[in-house]
Image 1: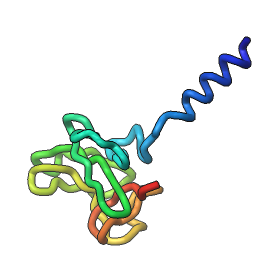
Image 2: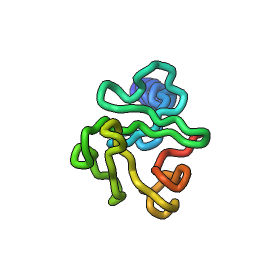
Image 3: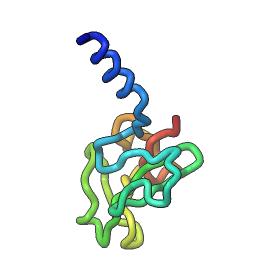
Image 4: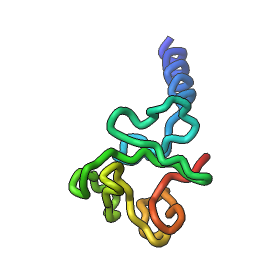
Length: 106
């Protein structure tokens, strides 16, 4: 009986469509169809090759730190992880248009 329960729990977990960076302040948002995939406090930046949920902000101090990367508030609207090259981004992220870090699409 324990083996059957373990198998069901394992399979149920495998079906979950996890986003890269899930559990961080800047998770991915690829393939999410609703208009607010990042919740009420974020915006989805959906680029050709990458995605990222960016927290909303009024100034730079509203932006949560992540992976030692510099952050900025863009247009008093959303936070951005600043980069000029891929090495500037947290592990697993790419530098989109030599400007902002995002998660590569699957």
